[in-house]
Image (tube, rainbow, N blue to C red; front, side, top):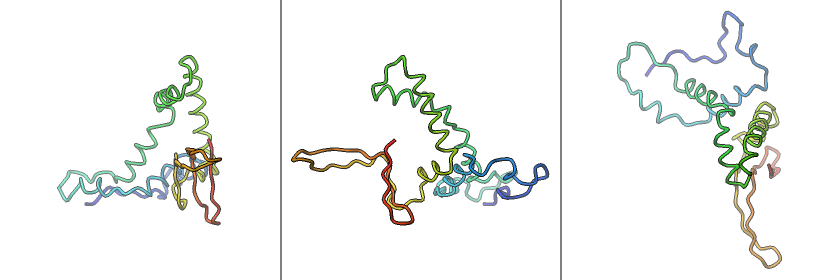
Length: 159
């Protein structure tokens, strides 16, 4: 099925390139990289070969727009719910959700933060549960994030 042209690096009249609008470490590039790794075969299959008046917009571009539109700020209700489940008192939820949103925004706006959270690491896992024996007692732990970098170093991140 042909789609409307989707050329993210295409030059525009004003400004000459999208890369002139956004700084190199902008969240939009991270979203783009993540969506580029997704398997969108199910979305492509929905289009089939049916005739349409105009070609549809490219599914990858539309997915990027939808993901970016679901901004961190719009997730504050989910943050509040999770924080309440963790025992944060009701009166502190709004402030705590604001701090979570700010921390996520800063992490995603920073090149190192995006690298830590990126999906292209070997053996990457989030909320990784481990059980072991320590001093004769069974111990359960959860690692917030872990992966192996390109140098073979195992990273363990505790938020």
